[in-house]
Amino acid sequence: MGKLVALTLLGASLAFIGERLLTCRERMNASREVESVEPQSCHLIEGLEYGSEDIDILPSGLAFISSGLKYPGLPNFAPDEPGKIFLMDLNEQNPKAQALKISDGFDKELFNPHGISIFIDKDHTVYLYIVNHPHMKSTVEIFKFEEQERSLVYLETIKHELFTSLNDIVVLGPEQFYVTRDHYFNNFFLRLFEMILDLRWSSILFYSPIGVKVVAEGFSSANGITASPDQKYVYVADVAAKNIHIMEKHDNWDLTQLKVIPLGTLVDNLTVDPATGDILAGCHPNAMKLFIYNPEDPPGSEVLRIQNIFSEKPRVSTVYANNGSVLQGTSVASTYRGKILIGTVFHKALYCEL
Ligand SMILES: *[C@@H]1O[C@H](CO)[C@@H](O)[C@H](O)[C@H]1NC(C)=O
Ligand SMILES: *[C@@H]1O[C@H](CO)[C@@H](O)[C@H](O)[C@H]1NC(C)=O
Ligand SMILES: *[C@@H]1O[C@H](CO)[C@@H](O)[C@H](O)[C@H]1NC(C)=O
Image (cartoon, rainbow, N blue to C red; front, side):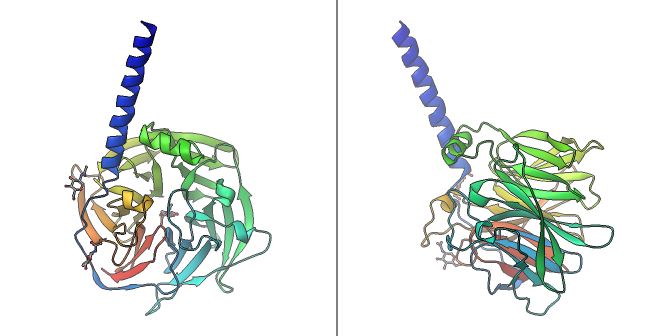
């Protein structure tokens, strides 16, 4: 009798895991075809060959780009090169990307930048907050940007026991920021397990010098995070659930969910168009191809614009789409004065007119 129960339980768990595996495969839809959509006069950015995972643009048109991310399971074309932060001046006719110098006192060899966020203080000093993965751990690094020298001055590393599997960051005050944890576990196999079983243990943390707290949880895999221009709302991309969560920010920094916008494609990172307040989302139309990389059949790229976010029916349109022949694995897109800069996890970066 005991054996029968055990066998039934085993059968039931296998069926459960099988079902989850199938849904997981479907979610990562490797077979989805991508119809090409291209704005005008697009060109690839010289010097960005190994990823442009995150982009943040200053109101003055200077763009910061994180490059060279090493992330378990994803391809990297320069595994021995440390990550870098590039700068581009989008006011130039043909902007070029230039790697920023980083001051001493920071371990540049271990630099593995992921999400970045700009903070400008009362004195107009520009700070860059960067999620870093030295030895695949997660820290937040703070740098001061020196515009004249085109360099980053290293200020501080923030560590915390809850800082595991960090992905993205949005800074809303001096040393006050939200970070997403895209997984609960740090170990690659446990992460895989977490994803296949869809445990929804991914969360958002709020950090201030007073402490760290979990402010929202229950995500499949919380990835990109950004704030509305008035900073009353926080937008979170749940990459595995293929949707965007619009969260209301409270005085105590807690977040409550206002609505969820389903997109039907894996959403990586989000930016807000400063001119319109629309959300731009970098998406992975056929994510399985990211993990099983084949240069003959590469992962595609997709950028969506979401208008009227707070209305009953937000409008979703495709700004850019490509089957991977030009651009592979988009993670982010950011606009500046009628132009759009599109970044990727491990591939190139594209600049187009809108
Ligand atoms: C996967 O892609 C194929 C081909 O484009 C499509 O027919 C199918 O509906 C997609 N499946 C899911 C779950 O999105
Ligand atoms: C996502 O985009 C925001 C806004 O540009 C940026 O601050 C952040 O670093 C990006 N994160 C990732 C993980 O690409
Ligand atoms: C991608 O599209 C281009 C034309 O836009 C086509 O020549 C190429 O064969 C396609 N590649 C794949 C892998 O489907």
